[in-house]
Image (tube, rainbow, N blue to C red):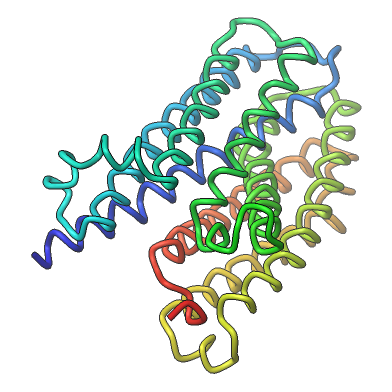
Length: 300
């Protein structure tokens, strides 16, 4: 029985982590497509590579969404994963949680279909991708602790904004460090891209800070709960990782990006810093996934 509980917990955390990683990549790639000028060309088959990675991210997120529903079925039924398989369809079609999960997966499936088109989407197509990601963010937020307060509540709004902001930040950092800056663009295109990236990261950080403080205090309730509960310690670990990532982002903003605007060597340093930042943000996303499997102190 203990092994079954461990398997359910691992699936719950692992699926949430992969789901958020896939969504973050899609959010980052959507921004990258907007920031690269239309006349920048297609060096080294960049568009094709971006499309394949987008499809991979969407596919992983869709699979993770299905697995997260299976884990939720096991948790609701108090069973192991094998027994939950027989209850999966009923949970997905007869509960509010299941309906929300299906809507979230359907939104990602729509994004996957749009990204599979072998040409650049027109503005209306990109707007449809953005709408699909917005539907996912809203429905996914409603499936967490914030959704218990109601769809039109302040905690729900804060959670939706927080998820979107952290996904944009993590996604932009990952896409930029692992793909965009790996390609040799003209310096004017690089400077324009880095300028947009800097502004977006600053805006995302402001949203993360405001909504994170509100949601964290709303769920933790007191300093004692922050220090002496597993939930609080996990939350502190997430915050620590984010703060280190902010430090690296600050270096990039005030030192790295100005240097990158002057030489390819500066771009290489920024790319390395972004990759380190990506690892830290992956750790923060993992901590967030672990939080979804725990009851906040204020709910106990």
